[in-house]
Length: 265
Image (cartoon, rainbow, N blue to C red):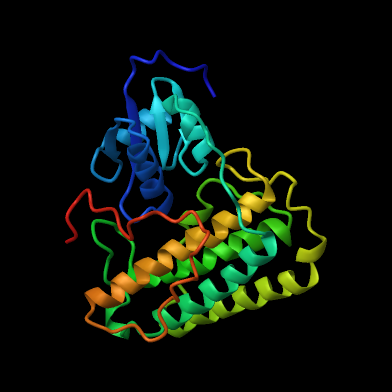
């Protein structure tokens, strides 16, 4: 990344609705009293062109001039914002893996309650359907498994996958989720105990340990589970089997469930 720009340059926060890390980054800046220009890349046609000049194709991004950081790594955000990094406590890896299992199970249960005729309905201010959101939750764990079992790096765009055309029913998406969960539990039983979680993860968004990558897998999918409770509420459905109050304890979740910078449609 480029050398730090002069402090006179404004901070720009690039984001999109429904993006868990975008919301977390903006909340982090606000809590530290850092003023920033908020740029919704779905509404600002020039935003991605601006980021493309830096070789960036995804959000969240915290930028000051030509210096930038991926908002998924808050300690990198502090460098760009010019504030101290106070560190962060991370739950033990075994506990994080347990949380991923329960989060994935909860996601399956919530998604199963969405009526079939509502699967294609879009989230507020975001071109992502309810079915795609469920697939995304399952894919977050799948991407972690690709890294750990297949040895594949987490590349930019991995979290933007959508269900393939043949996965065109709720039951098929649920089958995908069940398969991901079964593989994750196999990894948890057979390989997690011998894994060096202090080692560096091969991910696109910054220099993080495997422990931090696992934490992100947990809180990222967990935040989307909170959004699924919101979805059922918008449909007038009382969730059966919502996440327990303690499921997200100790995880670096955003305060809000959904970015309310724009009113919910």
